[in-house]
Amino acid sequence: MNNREQIDDKFNVRETIERYFFAVDAKDKMSLVSCFSADAEAIYHWLTPEQKTLVGGVAIGEDVYAACSLFTTSTHSIANLTINMIEEAAEANTFAIAHVIRGGSLTIRGLRYQDRLIRTPRGWRIMQRRHTPMWQTETVVQSPRLF
Image (tube, rainbow, N blue to C red; front, side, top):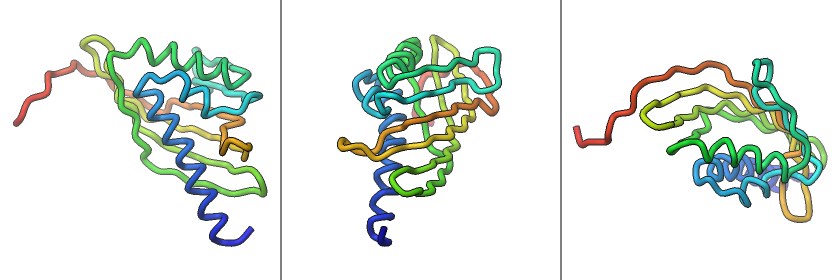
């Protein structure tokens, strides 16, 4: 693989991860499903009492959609990201910040996503995911206002 191909692949892997976060915040079920391979496996809430394993891209996308549908609104932002290319696969390690509003409560959570992605005929897809909450804080929501 030449340097230009590796740069393109890393860009496309990052785009898949960003598309996932956008789909969560937009509550777009079809886009969520499209981020995963058909045989994907994901572990959400790694090492917490709520830990669960999901198998299949459709099942993962639908489960994430059901969870984000409970949010009044949310914004997920990538804090930092590393991508290592391994032949036709990639390993991505992402730290993110989630701002989630449910009713009058705002939860801000630090997250880590450890992903393995594969190249498919339809682009890069997440094949394995480990989602780990690292910390969180909660506060009361205030209405937006100009200073």
